[in-house]
Length: 98
Length: 477
Image (cartoon, rainbow over all chains, first blue to last red; front, side, top):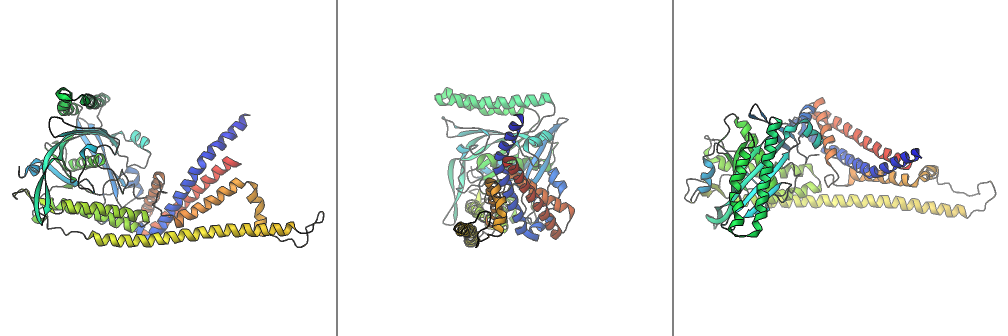
């Protein structure tokens, strides 16, 4: 009985997750195709923007200069320390860029 | 009166200019906050032609590759509260008629006020005090809203007293930074510090001013043609001395930078390709044209009698021909896409129908043959691979249907769909950006970066296909 319930639960979750997983798969297929279409020139744009793992995880992507076609977005970290306001910028690749 | 707007910010300790994109050159101050989730109060005074605007927004700009909740836990200082307290004010707008600039009076043409930057406080007690102040500001605005419908001088009293109460609450909330704002209906946005904190560097002040600009953009206009959280197409330009080239002073520079940024975005969208991007680029051009028409015709000039002089230093863009070129490209790409879709549909439909037709003919043929017990009738036609695959295809028709559909969707996602037309999503962008960053870390050669990026994307695609398989296994086995 318990085993049946577990099986049914797995089946129910899987049926709900199936369309989502198909959507994810379609997204990755489209993204892979996007990389192929961008080719070496697409990679060159990211290379010029200095986009690396360290900058990606620490949200310290370089500010977009006027010759770059990789847009960035900026946020701020701000806190009060010893009565003083301390601010620092966070920067990531724009969400418009896949 | 001649130069009253310029005088407002000319004495500022540090000054900035930017543009809030709008295609009508006529921002609506009564609609502030309607597009984004900010606590907003915008009410007209009954006793004078002025509108009061208060906006309170908690902004947590998550630039880290983690879900918002996790980022807030790891980096609580990414959450900043912003307060705008402003009123509309009369202004003269420069209108070009017959080649001459004529100032026209707009009695509510400018939103003039103060922005408070309220960062995360140091101790729990300080944070409680800030929270109480923010709640107090919310209550003041709620009282105004509640009293207002009754009408009459008494009902307006809370609104008349609102600004000073709100500012007192903000200033008592703990260490903060205050900026002055003048926002004109044309979208021209001026920010400046009347009293810049002495212990902050210019870089810090610029950073806060930029964030204040994004805050104003976020609550004033609705985001179109770009992701709402990535509204950095139009820059905020610092007013800095430029003595070696006076004709390109700040008044010219911020206009030029804005126009160039819009133009660069058009270029980027067209280079990335895809119909959705190209259509977005037409939208950006509409904004650039509006900016060119409303703000490139003049510059503010304190020495001129009317406060403005003709802007002649920056060459205008020829957007008409650019639009024609993009439209032609859109037609070509749309035709290619339509043909690709037609060929794909024809291929799939023909394959299925021919297979079904031949299978049914074979069944009909085999069914009509004379049968002997325990023997295959003479003249039986074998359907080859299809016959061999039949046990697997028929084992679970639902699984077969889903697998074939998934393969078809992969094909369409890779080769037929416009990649930017809604398939890509937030988590996929993070994974793709991770792949890009990884490629950038392992090599500085674009060719190698491309192959690393591609291999990672293919691995992620296989992983997502595995996820589909897992769901099928769980659902139907």
